[in-house]
Length: 390
Picture 1: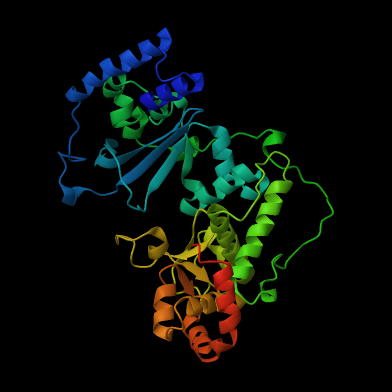
Picture 2 (picture 1 turned 90 degrees about the vertical axis):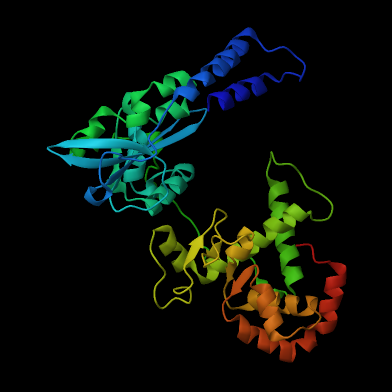
């Protein structure tokens, strides 16, 4: 982190590659290089608790500390095990496993108030992140610690190797973590300023519940795909400080358009399922997604977790986009049918599932293989005018 911050400082100066660095940055770099030598003397036990038999370990707790600054983010995790007699042993650990007992600590009372509050109270930037945090952890497991007692603070501000190696805070966590905890005293928050939250206002608005894209108007997937792309370009060019686009739609625009297309379709058909997933709940048993183990990706698209998590495949192949049964699903199957020169049902289904999980795809494919000849000629014309660019 220290080196990354140093490079950021150099980059901000806008120097040419052959210019000499200012004396201050030269000293920082030399201090960093000298400090690295201390790492070879740093020893950490491979075993978390070398003096305790694994069969006697009970009551394990996982404590995660987080901190953020203008220059970076940091987190450190510790295992805590009771030894009896009101004493505990703490070990520095890096882990991704889920645990029953855990505590998350932050030295920001404002951030703690955000996490423990209703996300609807905050502005979009904060609200989106609070929703994600609350979907992964319970707000009741978040607590406050001072900045001087937060080991993650050593990461976020960037620390040289020598003081890091000699830091008992970094390797063992805060001293009070080795003592009995009174968590009720650690849950303090603050009253946020007015500007941090939305004040309640009575406003007039129009609620729009229908999709702005009328996909039923188009009889070919390429047409729907490109219409969404042109609408997104218009929106971009209408913004005052955006980079204006012109000419044919670029490949990047088409990728974003396809994402937006499936985003709109999913919000129209699976609004309740998406809301449940964002709250950390599973889809209802009556939902067609209840057996698919779905999740919402970073772009807001519903995907399947599946059993290929560790396979050597692309993200799209391991986690296909869920497409609800309907007009867009029919257009997608029709497009694949024509693209594969009117292949059979099994071929269409297997090739589509490399990127999409269409609800009821086999039934749609059977219908297309029987009656799809009606769209053969116009479909071929569309394919010639708009080559497959995905």
